[in-house]
Length: 140
Image (cartoon, rainbow, N blue to C red):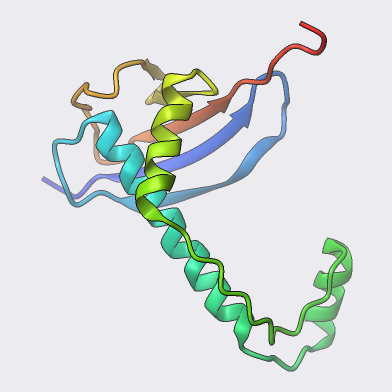
């Protein structure tokens, strides 16, 4: 069987714009519970954050395209930042799982809502995961 590739996207309830740009990750372990999958996603995001952090330490010569892109984003950066933000992986995973339990976000896999962290997932070769972030009502 081919290694499943999971496409991950996010939305906020009541908003048409995506929460973040969709991305993909390969899943080497099968079967997975929802809790294990969420932990893998958190670890993957932490690795990406650490990579971006390391990249920001390198000073770069900017070309016109880089400068124009920075202007469009509202920040021009040539690197050289010495940011060393340490992420506690265990705490990050615990926070993500607690947020799920507390109902701050919902998880849908292939359009089916996942409600049980201990449930073993039935992932296909090209499964899609949607994080749906819930927002509280104003004044309620």
